[in-house]
Image (cartoon, rainbow, N blue to C red; front, side, top):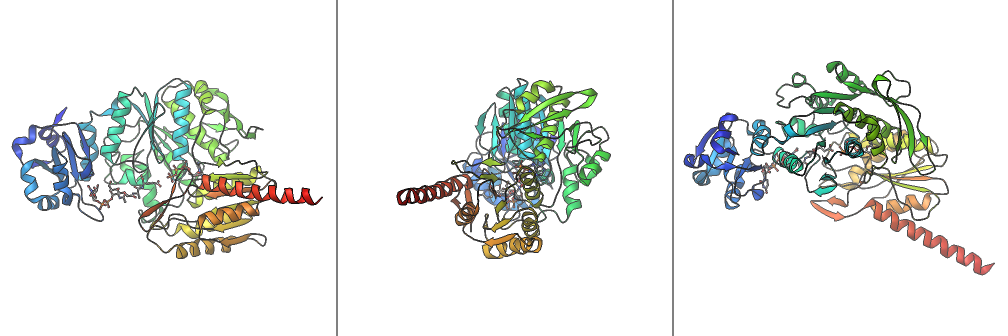
Length: 519
Ligand SMILES: CC(=O)N[C@H]1[C@@H](OP(=O)(O)OP(=O)(O)OC[C@H]2O[C@@H](n3ccc(=O)[nH]c3=O)[C@H](O)[C@@H]2O)O[C@H](CO)[C@@H](O)[C@@H]1O[C@H](C)C(=O)N[C@@H](C)C(=O)N[C@H](CCC(=O)O)C(=O)O
Ligand SMILES: Nc1ncnc2c1ncn2[C@@H]1O[C@H](COP(=O)(O)OP(=O)(O)OP(=O)(O)O)[C@@H](O)[C@H]1O
């Protein structure tokens, strides 16, 4: 337990307001005023839209024990500030990570936290790390895009990497639920916004870097530097992230190779057959059960066969990272490899099957690199034609839209451009950019269609498919909504694809019946 006064001293904040109350015990923190309560520190931070201190009265009504803010926040707190201790720091976000860790009893010290970063593959790899740990008999937790869970039990969480108070509270809950290790997705936003400051990372894993988030980062160098915070304090000025004790780095792109030079102690990983890396794999074989098998070659002559229920060569890279990460924790790799067999990742190359003779896959690819990786993998496994249904999100990195379209048309035979969370933007403008990219890359035999209504777009691709073809519905994966102008309408690619398949199969059956009756 720590008091507000002790916390102020540790994070070098000044105590104003109700000083006499500064010996109040703190048991947690929050960045959302509405979530404050007894024993909770409300962090009133300046935001892009509003200053958190304007919600000071809400936090006090909810029972907040103390407030952390900046000098501008003091003015906004006005009379509320007399009612409880207010910790003032010139840059409160820069101390929120360590403050959150302190009020929750530094949970990462008692856990092996594996931080996973990279543009694509964080969620999948965190599930693989969890499966590998479970294979070796360890209780494991996950924090990431699809929510959090410990020992298989779901815990609600916001964002890919939650804000520091929530991140530390999740770690604390996982520690008390007996977790040995936690696989946490670490976004570049989190690394820049101090969400994981105050966390001890046993292992940091870097997967890859490709264009994304250029609405937040001015350029790719800045995006890379943010990622480097997990590995090297000196790589990005102003970092308060504790670099991971051990590193695992995929060296299949230039960014990974640069990072491996920065961290010469890193275990290197490559999915390229015959590459010079600590962890590599032989060619993958697809089995009749829809799994892939491959031989993993690890350090010290380790050789182990892995069967993975998720296809795609990029998932071989993800699996190698998971094995290298748990190996760095001292886990038995052979037992971990058995665990990988049982992994299930929602919305990542997830098949939708309703008795059809072509494949329908729902995948979360919503970045050019991911679209390219998925379609290249699908192309390598099919003799049939490929259709892809995709759009691009509004109010996010607009430069990636054309690249998404181009990545799709590079490989697919049919590209159906549709809506994908237009948010506050005009959907037609977003579609036009994706379409432009697709048309610029389309070969003679590639068709590009534009159908704004996502359900109709899925239906059109399904109607187009013939025996042996593959329809990839990209962008939403596990998500269950379409966000338009601040409202999220229910929409699930998997459910809609299933409906469209039933409709089409219904038609086929009817046509069949008609043929039968006339013959
Ligand atoms: C750019 C960014 O990350 N912004 C985050 C930031 O917003 P902000 O500073 O602009 O906050 P604001 O809305 O002005 O509000 C100011 C303060 O008032 C508080 N407030 C506000 C309203 C209210 O009713 N009550 C209240 O207490 C807020 O908690 C905040 O502290 O602080 C907010 C509070 O935590 C976050 O919700 C918000 O994330 C937004 C929603 C977001 O979408 N972030 C995305 C881009 C993000 O972080 N993505 C990454 C990467 C995902 C990936 O890899 O694809 C992630 O890790 O999820
Ligand atoms: N190692 C990889 N390299 C390239 N593409 C990948 C890789 N792993 C997964 N993908 C593709 O990226 C998509 C998203 O995968 P995943 O959700 O695991 O990544 P993520 O980094 O968590 O994404 P996000 O940051 O958007 O949450 C997958 O559906 C797949 O299409």
